[in-house]
Length: 258
Ligand SMILES: NC(=O)c1ccc[n+]([C@@H]2O[C@H](COP(=O)([O-])OP(=O)(O)OC[C@H]3O[C@@H](n4cnc5c(N)ncnc54)[C@H](OP(=O)(O)O)[C@@H]3O)[C@@H](O)[C@H]2O)c1
Image (cartoon, rainbow, N blue to C red; front, top):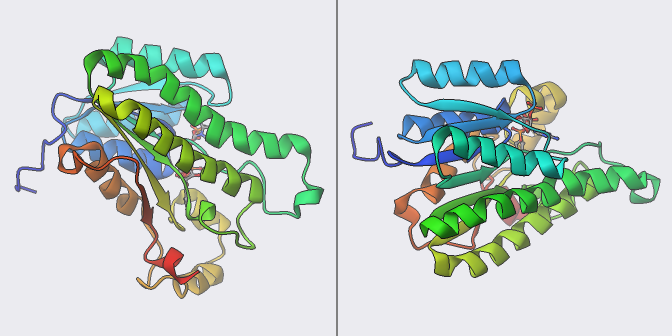
């Protein structure tokens, strides 16, 4: 690319959680390709080392910061280690998350499974934002992107209720952060992907079901991690300088049909 967007994140430090694989890995590489120094987070140290090797091999700067997103102290600690390694965080992509359980009737769920979904997706996002905000406020700038899901938009037979409810919470939480932090030069936005084919989803969703799902998307294909990464790049960079508090559906038009 030679349109002046190549290095649009030059000089910025981006922390991407859940970057050891899947969507987060591609987001981290994409932000690095556009000039950001990236801290990549996950639990799998080997996978994180491989992500850093790939980014550094392409000329980027990368540090791995491991930590469990369901442990409050580990979240604060990983933010500290990221800042010690690559400086103040300018960009936070709170991507780590997922559903700890499969869809099931709500009255059959174990209480702890519901709580686990809320903890991994909503409470961890809250704790992460709380850990990065003081530094961003001090520097008077920052851009935060949180990760929702099309599941938060409407119930479906195959989206776990606790996960969907937690992601809906992430959307409203992000809008609240945008309202409070905007006067400090900080923007907060959220992306809400529909089915994105990653190593995990490709394995979990049988091929015939993937073909059926294509038919539910007006743009006749399923999503890819780079579809999400492009949206995140737009939202964290200066081209979206006056965009804050939005939830951007990355869904091939699927949510408008429901
Ligand atoms: N794929 C989709 O179709 C889709 C659609 C809508 C929304 N999303 C959302 O997009 C985000 C990424 O999804 P994905 O499909 O790329 O997931 P994935 O391939 O399963 O990767 C999940 C990432 O999150 C990390 N993670 C999970 N639980 C963690 C924990 N307790 N502590 C620390 N890290 C943890 C994993 O780290 P380790 O593996 O290193 O532990 C991994 O890096 C999630 O928030 C998901 O809800 C995905």
